[in-house]
Amino acid sequence: TGDDLFKVEEYRNLSALLEKSKKVFFVRQNGAVYMKSEGKKKLFAKEEEATRMDVAFPVVHGTNCEDGTIQGLFEFLNLPYVGCDILSSAVGMDKAVFKDVLKTAKLPVLECKTIRAREYMLKKAEINKRLFNESDLFSG
Image (cartoon, rainbow, N blue to C red):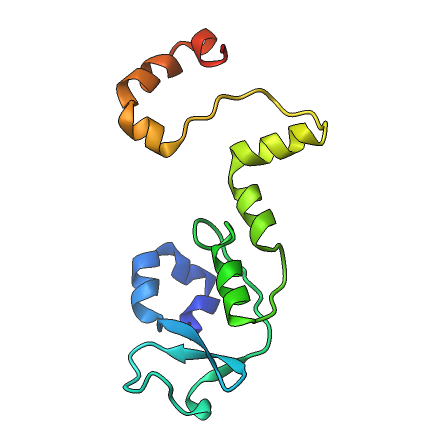
């Protein structure tokens, strides 16, 4: 968190912006959820030293944000949030799974070949060779 996060020009240098920003974490305490600053001496500081959270508006992008992870955190904390739930976020983030869901619903999707990260790590040379041979990539 921090005032610089509201200045568009600050996003030109993300490393510097992160350095200026204050790290926070969420904690459930006394039946409510609070956002607290990292580095406090006491884990459970007095309520006036934290910001009470009534609802989350996750305006985020990427892994650990729009893939269901942050929604899982909010549900674990029992903190209401806007937007998609865990499952729809996870499915929407995984393009191969999402295409399968669309196909199951009889919606048209373009053909594709899915290569998982682990598979690529283990068979990089073989997969790269196949990628340069389009007819091989879309067969089988």
